[in-house]
Image (cartoon, rainbow, N blue to C red; front, side, top):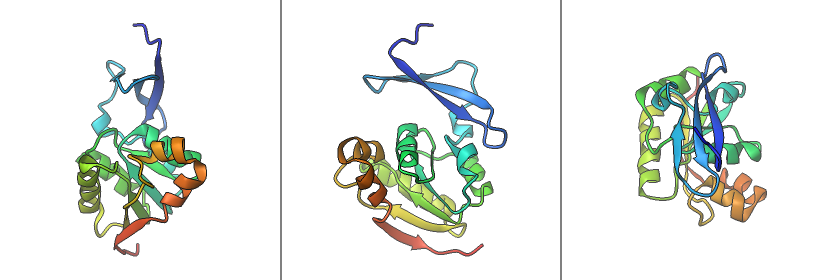
Length: 167
């Protein structure tokens, strides 16, 4: 298959780091597809294998590009690959032992529903913080692209605290 004009984004198994699937996304557009025969994305969490090394906190966002944006400014992040979190994805994140979870869905209706799902899934498990302002942009990648590294790094300070929990 000709993948010219697409970039490959590997999804890894959380426990071994082996590649479980690959998402191919257009470099000049939003079209994408996954490697045929790969593991279902609903059973994986993008970036979790690497994020597990930092048990302090993690940002949970929708898209891989947003997780990569957070990581580029030194903030631990993972993605579900959609505006939904599956039971399996939530289970994998819970097993990782994060103390603080930031819900960072896009700044639209689906993103607000995503943040609500994150809060429901992790209430009582960790301290929950919902990112409430992306500096007027739609998502973390847009903040990075148009506002710069400092603007995105500063977004982490704009949250609503939902609950506290001590392990």
